[in-house]
Structures are given as structure tokens and as C-alpha cells.
Length: 94
Image (cartoon, rainbow, N blue to C red; front, side, top):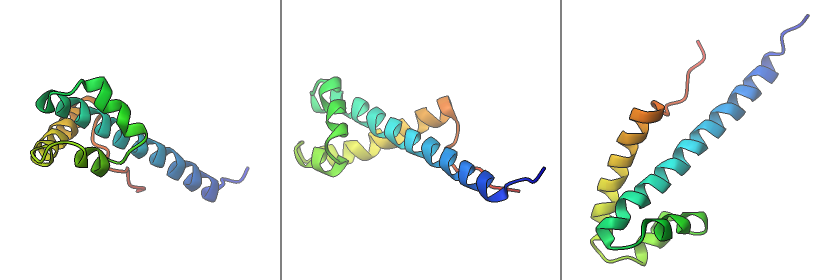
């Protein structure tokens, strides 16, 4: 039996990419959910926009103070997600 190192590395890359994409999506959604009450917007309404618009476009449609609050909300969302799901840093091969 031969071990397929290339296949194993491709599988690892696929799994890691999916894991990082999942974390990034959750980070965007949580950030908007935290930002919504500060902006006086319904959380579900703001979160739904992440499916069709980048964060910059969403922020451009909000008041000027949204940028400062966005940075704070993103930092808090990242902290919460790391506490819940662990650090998203890719695992290194030994």
C-alpha cells in the first residue's frame, strides 16, 4: 500500500480553506449583528446584506460613525468566535 502524500496535502488544503471560509463568514455575520443595534437597524436586515454586498458597500450606506463602530464590532466578534470555536489560524504540518 502506497501513501498518497499529494492527495493528503490537497485534502488538507481543501479542509483548511473550508474551515477558514466558514470562520470568515461567521465573523462577517457576527460583526453586522453586533453593529446593527448601534446603528438602529434590525440585525437580520443588516446580516442579510452580507450575502450580496461586501462590507465596504454596506458601510458606505450607513452613517459616518459606522466605520469606527464596525472596527470595534469586528474585534469583539472575532474575540467571541475564537472563544467559541477556537483560533482560526491554519494548522501547520509538522
